[in-house]
Length: 335
Image (cartoon, rainbow, N blue to C red):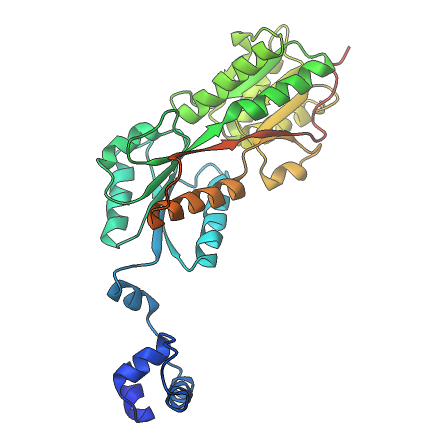
């Protein structure tokens, strides 16, 4: 049923029905009551998207994230909290998954698909793949990106400060007396993983320690990679007394290897993750980690995107600071 049929049943003009649906306060209360009664009777639901497009706005934003592969819930949480923020502000979210590992141009494919659906702005939360943004060309709509090392012309950037959390994590280990600190690294071709590695090396220097590159093992930031990486570190003639990981998934994989060898994090070797996924509170022992919160990042990204859409004059670069979260997986080196 359309508004013309509702108008006929309520014995009013279709323009009156339109004004009632849109909440115009100048409509005669008796007429408005009659229209609402008919709407309730027939179960009419207005097409808000069509109304928005008629006014020149879609009230829809795009969200581009990395593929949800490898069992990592990080991007699933990004989607959850970004959509919550959008709904609270009267927006719908069009989600797309950018497989930039296979095809760097896929971000542009995702963005173009969103433009065709008339989104008002796009948040690109793929982290550390800003080289792929060149495929977008000159931005023709508000775009927010998280994790670029340097400002990107025409795109609002959320700069991630990896050093704050990494510095406090290394300082914590140094206070316990750790001197040999290992690192399970992600793919350094990704700038997000390269930034984490650089932050660790700088944090080690600030703590007065020497970072041993032989203790840096690639782990592909996955559960399996973390398990294999920890096994490699433990097989060294002089293994590290503490291990930091590029993300929590690698750290949880490392916990599996320790368990298989009757070793315990916090007692036999210290272990620190990165991200602070909810899982970290439920591992055994609970995992110390560096907080890179999906909820905080999603909400900040949406707020920045709204500022861009609304033309709010503010700085083009915001900073998100990581910080260390202490739990049970760290302790003094075994004598």
